[in-house]
Amino acid sequence: MSGAYAYLNHMTDYLGLEGLLSEEARMVRATARDFVNREVLPVIEQHAQAMTFPRALVAKMGELGFYGATLPERYGCAGLSHTAYGLLLYELERGDSGLRSFASVQGSLVMWPIFSYGSEAQKEKWLPQLATGAKIGCFGLTEPDFGSNPGGMRTRAERTGAGRWRINGTKMWITNGTIADLAVVWARTDDGIRGFLVEKGTKGFSAPETRGKWSLRASVTSELVLEDVEVDEEASLLPQALGLKAALGCLTQARYGIAWGVLGAADACYQCALDYAKTRIQFDRPIAGFQLQQEKLAWMVTELTKGQLLALQAAGLKERGLLTPAQVAMAKGNNVNAALEICRKARTILGANGILDEYPVMRHMANLESVYTYEGSHDMQILIVGQEVTGIPAYR
Image 1 (spheres, rainbow, N blue to C red):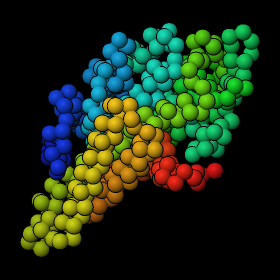
Image 2: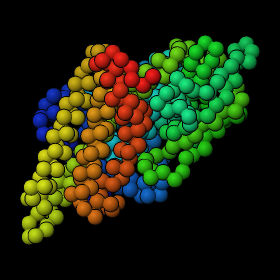
Image 3: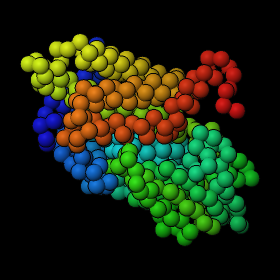
């Protein structure tokens, strides 16, 4: 591990967040932090530069129970609280947004819909394998022409006979797509939008990788192409996934995790900038002693702390089954925006050194530019809250 990461041995905790956590939550956070320090930080910069995903970490994360962590133990999952899960993603994204994205897609966008909308046979077949990382999943909702308006999707599924369906369409910006063994694909049918499980190797199904990214370079991003893909209804159709609301329910689960995760990236950049400012000497004194740098650092730790408290309150509501999609939108929108600004300020404190891979700042900043947009763009999160407080939808 490079010297640039030596200070990352604790979570920033300006207002005593630690004292509000359960023993379980503290233990999960410590386990995830140790994993990131030992397994992720020594290799992540190389993977980002090479634009490769650290595939060797998949099984290790499965062994630690990082996938579908809030789902029941009877399916091989950890059965964690939503607070503990949020802290887990905080630590994973402290390593890299691509790593958190992998775990988030696997758990919230693949395992959660199977658990919530699938048959018992589908749950028993897929959840234990996905929980260990023996199988990898992806989520196919976004299309080339329909991002913020998923209701306009053109992917179509039609019955071809007793118990059979044929699916045609294209999905875009799919995390894990090329390496996935299973895709949760949303398609328009005569009965409305439905969810299907499509296995790798099914005739007519392909997942070419998207290349040339400046962001999420240590993550696999793909296109899904379905050309006369035929599937069996009993094995493939998620029986309870009825309408677009079912697909959006998956996104709500993922956005909750993002609200926690991005704070880990922000924390890494804040601590890096703070450490750098205290050791970088200019005009015969540490730059941390100059007012402009102190203003930046004070703003950064304040916004980070506000984000932590917002995420913790959201977790408490979620534990009690009270968290609404609009509240999740507020948490995702606020925390991603704050995290991105924290990374940008950290880059200015590091000056020219801020663009080097010796430090994590530029990588996190570039990653968060994608997180700002995906799984509901920042603008859409704001409009969701706006509709909630005014009662008037502004995006139709």
